[in-house]
Image 1 (cartoon, helix red, strand yellow):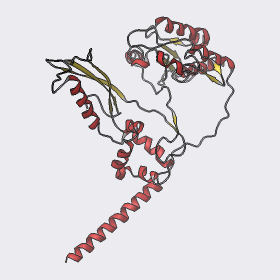
Image 2 (cartoon, rainbow, N blue to C red; image 1 turned 45 degrees about the vertical axis):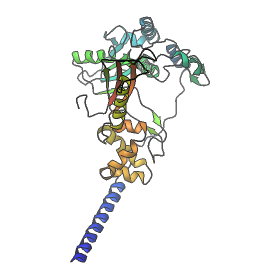
Image 3 (cartoon, rainbow, N blue to C red; image 1 turned 135 degrees about the vertical axis):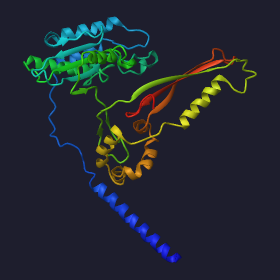
Length: 372
């Protein structure tokens, strides 16, 4: 009887293994490439005037600060656009949203169609004094040298601002008019949260009940070896953005004392324990939404056995998440992250502080909320 049970269990297990292997093979076989076949277009020569305009834009230091705004620089940049792109300024309708951001409307021939929105930002991250020596050329020089334009903003994000303006200026010079109306919006404080720029622009569109067919923002990067087993470079397309939340924790003790006789529990020590606890208990990782879509597109391009794993995430999900969690960029793709970014405590090296604070920055994965 016992032998018969063992035989049946072995047979059942064998059938399970065969079925599982068949499912793996079938899913992997059907896990075909989703890439679009396109014909490469030869690169066009960029007119020197276009290069010169971007160089000039880099020379206007439109810097973002949390505490203040350099109004003169942003007013200068708006004047620069009006001078260098006269057709854009004269034929498109400027929407007055705030003094420093820029919003234009290009009326289409079919006003019943929902418009599209092109986004970019004109502000830059300031260059810290101690890092100036690391620059090959001054960060706001806009120097044209060795086939490059040098300076802060050449990638993030004045290249997109001027790219949009150059394209529209060219189309206007050819008397082109789109069927669908088009808005362009350039925020002035994206690098510090966008509250006065992008948020006010979004509020303006909401107040005017303007809904868009689609929105295009600054692009992402092309990565080499983006994931294990992925040989070709991956051109990433962002279809969602993680949420943003900063939380400040504060410890208040009744007594501080002298460092020669420290208490068993200290304000800094309690915060240190908090940081360790948070690092040891991250938010759960998962594969869904935009992350799932990403894996569905890159998975077929992988070599075996990685392709088999991504074709069968229903079975390998836990193993896959464990591996992805080991790499910082991949970990940020599959979970809400939290990172201690600011710690403040103490004013003297021999005095125990009675207060200490910790700021934790969270980046919330699409599908989750601040409440969740």
